[in-house]
Length: 245
Image (tube, one colour):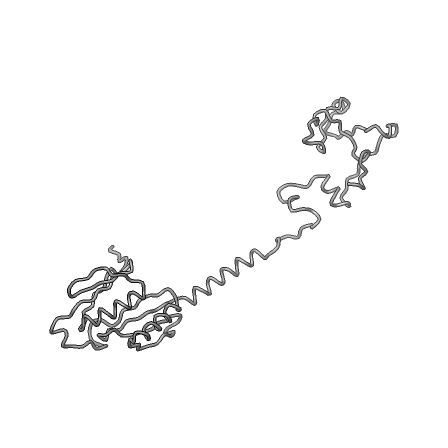
């Protein structure tokens, strides 16, 4: 299947070549076109995407002026960047004394345009379509994005526990002891015959008593200590009372 990818160029015939050349030269310079090429009776401009040419009509063609409604050319529309550019084009046309047949206005739903004639009576248009709909869609997208950012967490969270606690791991016993006093674990009682200044070794069901007696048990509270492998497991309440934690 053959597919059209764009309009390469348009060529129109004019009755007064010099007058038309002066008009289009000023118009295309205002709209960002550059001179493409020029011959004795033909000249063209381009904006990098399309080309627009004018050429001198022959003797027979100059006898008949263009009339709207005849077979052939009706009008040519230039798509502009915004409605503001349409208003700027109208101001330019008024400055150069062009014939504006339909002033800048919204002629269809979200279709803003200005219509004018060249020196030969050919109808041209500067238009912008869909700007209001694009603005509304962009505003809705920003509103949804802002709404997602302003929303808090989906589930209630205990404000006393930092976000780092419980987000990706379970809180430790010591974090709960410090932050949630009501969740404190019951600590084992001190052996009655122990010396008040002598730390007492504590055991757990998963720790062999033989290793405790040898003092080779690693206490998770001393994780990272250079001597953690020989650090006996002691009751910290004997050194620092729990109320000072």
